[in-house]
Image 1 (tube, rainbow, N blue to C red):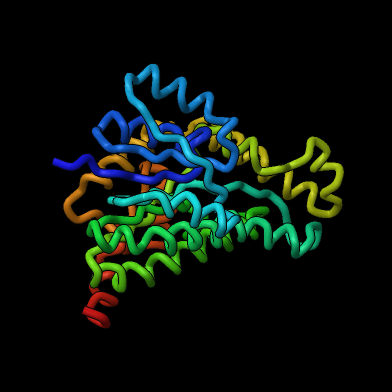
Image 2 (cartoon, helix red, strand yellow):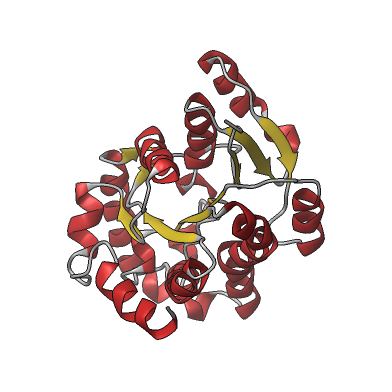
Length: 273
């Protein structure tokens, strides 16, 4: 049998790194991408410890030329895992519209760039697209306005794309973690003096940060999320929506009743099938 190939974005740390290693251990040929391959050390060390190899390539999801260059050399692609993203904490009055655009570029348009480039290959292989979103794509959260807007956009885009892609044999899924113990939180760009700069929002920001520290003290591991992504790669008919922990299901469940997306997909499938 031909070894199946998966391309994973954002593999220098966290969920992406863990998924790259777990997929390689499951027999996939893993193309592990990141914006700066000089940061591949942790991934390569983890792969070596696991006794597997990964194919590290440069890919900046915000640069269409970089995306095209990475995908152009592929003869086959069976799955895409859109994982690259960046957290952001802030509120509208105190940041620029350019700050918000930058969050959208990474977390929304980056997903679109890579998925668009991958779809011809995925149609040929009858493959699948897995996109790591967040419970922040279901419920808007304080001081996460730009981040949640981007994740809401990804969720809506993929939910709309799924029935269309299915007519060409491509499965589309979104994977929604809650709090995950990774470097993601340290990359939100919040300055050390954020409370001093918050002005009238300082009390609310202080309460938010206290709640967030508590949530991440009980966070799910990136390895656990990775194991679920690898299961989805192999699933015969993967669900559209996968919430990765009991905490994520309880949180999103306050808004979603159709937890696996099947009711929406059954409805919209009937519009195009």
